[in-house]
Length: 243
Ligand code: OOG
Ligand code: MG
Image 1 (cartoon, rainbow, N blue to C red):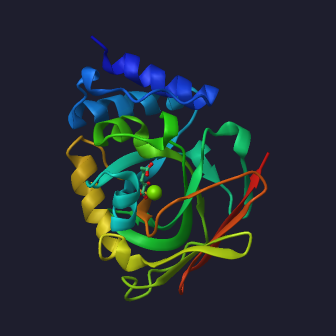
Image 2: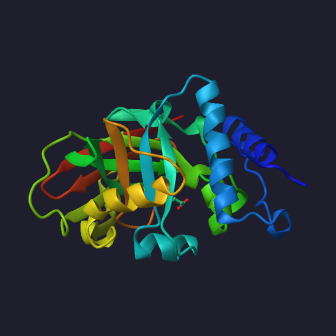
């Protein structure tokens, strides 16, 4: 029988060696609760290397993403400090397998409430061959979490439920959408994350970052690309893809 620790070691090795692994397959018989235990063990490998948990992310909160990935349930994953790329900073392409970028909204959570908002880019990088997975497989893989860029934190303006979202690569619009695509209103990310992660005993600590989920489909990254996300009224976040 394949244990939680064996699956976690396999996924962690894929991330560190940048070699994708085959889908776990039906024979492993992974259910969603066990997949979250694998995820916890995957992140424990990162923590053992000195990374610090800094928050949570929601995934598949928009129809565009559910359709793109063929999975139709909201999932959550864990963020660490090592995943953070400074705004305007460089992502090392060689540290990834097949990275993609997606436009997001990030919240700062303090005292159980949202205290600030920022435009964000999430970099996802499935550890599975061809970026293909089932719901338990993507949960075990920490929901493809790989990197994130936060624009400037600011007080949450009234009505952020229908702001225009633009994802540009090298100055060209490649995805356009609205924050309405994120759970109907991205602020729902907080109660959803509290409920979904809370079911596994995981809480949002003071100062935690919460990525609310992508507003559009994700776009594959290539070396040299300049990626910029603009969220109406919130501003921009950007990164450059290095070698
Ligand atoms: C899973 C992660 C999805 C989002 O914002 O929808 C996600 C994936 O698409 O690989 O982060
Ligand atoms: Mg995302």
